[in-house]
Length: 282
Image: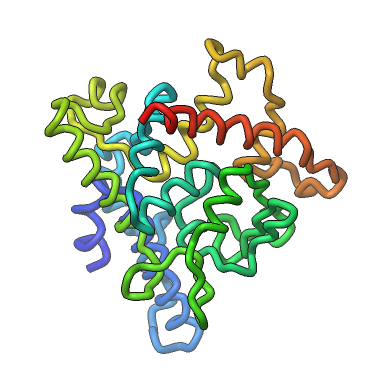
């Protein structure tokens, strides 16, 4: 039964299949531990019978693709179009772009996570993709990011910074669909829209830009840009800290207390200035 459920997904939606296996595996482990299940083997174990049955599907699975991104030179134009919109989704996307942050952290952000006097955002561990307790989760905020947060309405009894019109937390699909609607409107004008041009050309399929790709991958490409000279001007270790990428060492950075806050502020301000560089032209 597990195989029949997973096999159709394995070749085309491998990440979804793995998530389902993880959830099912936890349920089976729980039932085994409480002796609700007589068979002591977990049927989701890929090192057991399921792995053998899935082997043909695992060999034929599609190569994973990265999130569709906006090109570095188009980012200011996309940001400016968002800036002209009066919606919470547009503000959330702008904030994600300015901070090079994951959608989940932005959507779940609470007011008490922000120290606007010191231009800092300290993400809660439960709002982060990575759950290591010692992991740094402090984002330095540019002038534009602070102004954006200060400009948002704050509702009594509500902790979330970004709320829908129904006073609900924004969903990841909400932000993705916002970009898709922008894409459709732009495509009607220029027959192109907001797409990842390289990925579209390579795959032969229209790849509409995504929140994750624009917020993180475009920032990563910008900081390495040799035409702008950023590959020589920006400290690469500080860039990794801006993305909350931890050092891969067994001591979890226990002996490295340097947070490079000054350099990170310089990087994030330079990035924000670049994102906003087309505003005066709109």
